[in-house]
Structure formats: C-alpha cells, structure tokens
Image 1 (tube, rainbow, N blue to C red):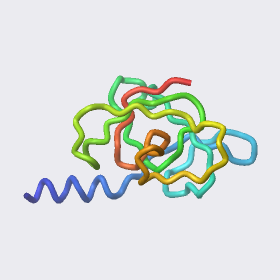
Image 2 (cartoon, rainbow, N blue to C red):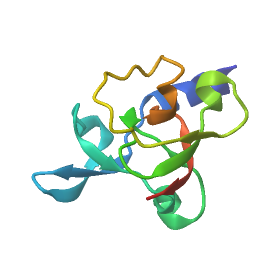
Image 3 (cartoon, rainbow, N blue to C red):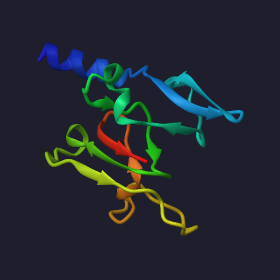
Image 4 (cartoon, helix red, strand yellow):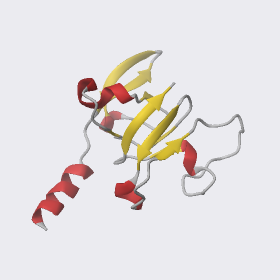
Length: 117
C-alpha cells in the first residue's frame, strides 16, 4: 500500500521538459511553465532519449497535426491503446468529456506509445 501511495505521489508531480513553440521558436520548457494555448510537440523519439520506452504525457493537449496512439489505462482502466486524431476544420467548441471529441485530446499522466506527423 505504501509503494502505491508513493507511486501516485510521484505521478502527480510530473516535471518533464516539453518542446514548446513560443515567440516563433521552439524551446524546451518544464511542463509546469506551460500556459493555455501553448503549442507543444510530442514525438515517439522523446522517450528516454529515444531508447524506445513510452513517453509520459506531461500536460493535457489537443492534437492539431499528425496522430498518436496512447495508453490511457491509468485513467480509464481500458487496456487497449487508443488512437488520437488531429482536429478537423470545424470551428465548433470541443469537449474532452464528450465521446465524439475524446479522439482529439491527450491527457496528462497517460503514455504516448506512437506518434506520426
């Protein structure tokens, strides 16, 4: 039980570096410095310096380009990987809780298994 609590505490304090576009250029920032509206880049190669391990997503995000496969089992209990897609061209507001919109959202604390684009 103690080990589980320690693991949960560790997961709750994610401090990963994230590629972020600010001021027209890409820079690595701590995820705690991210702001609403920041554009971030997540790639499969980020994991452990490209060692092939899964990438822990450090922030909630919307896919705007490319596609991803993620493991959301820590949040949902679902054991199958979930594919995520870029937003379509519609201007309607998106809801991460709505079934039809979940395919566009990445959630902090889940694992990126694969990314393209």
